[in-house]
Image (cartoon, rainbow, N blue to C red):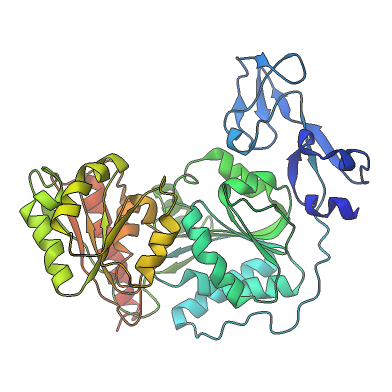
Length: 448
């Protein structure tokens, strides 16, 4: 059984078994077909997607075989293969008290949310935590995670974004320094090992089956989790029967808002940040041809950025796509050659290093696509959004981007400016949402 320890709670392909494991099948091992037929269609056993199976290809089974395209990035699920899983047995080493080493103090609002989350972890079920950006969601989880770990439960904190996982990992490791923990994401290069606490991207949940007693999914409104039925299925499949689900969001969609307001789902709402200062409200500046020959070629936007830099302000400059960034970059390099800056996007192999440089104050500003719209914290920055009317900027994305400013209690304020050529519904709604949360926080006496 020792050979199979890393398979507990996993959902893997039989073809992935090493030869030594195939020779020693343990009792309780579940083996099931890779696809289940439903009428004239087939459902993938790993991601739950419906596959029409209209196309065939020569397979290692020497037959015309089929595979699932939805979860192919985790390895090809073929019709001739089987899925193998072993029930999670627990049995983690006892932890010394206190499990939680974090010594911070929660605000009354955070304390209330922490109690709600703890109750859900104790009783099972599902809870939505709707908290504004910078409300301190991670700290609210600590007490519930600590109790779960102390009771021998297996806990997973998942996010759709790699950057969020990388941000969470050192904070969780510091708070629970005696707990064995692993961080799973595509391209990490690490060999999987079974641990009691897991930080993972939501895609990695496809590899689990009834593994976790507590499943916490952060940023549920973010791509690629949002409206992805395969990832919803993965989160549900990875939870043990009767387990606890906590969903965190700063920007719930219309359907979720209806469920919250009708009481169909338990919800905790936090309209204020932990430092009791209001959210920075974006200013939208309507400029015809605001891109023009590039941001640096636009006198309004470039003058704005230059003015902030001269006041020793540090900035995040959001650019909608990699293509736009490549167009604008020569102008930036020419006009801001005396300033320290870098650029990051999803395909940048050095993005982790550049983000760390920004965090350590080694850069004056950072150009970024929406890759940094959430999950990263810089102590004292202003935010400029280039072409905020671009289709990539949804209401949720703009709220998250605005939320990068004013997150630190030492620097609770910051400028947020949306440059656009047209007023769009996401721009209007994002500003209204931020103003509404500030009003709610004031009414509840949560702001200074």
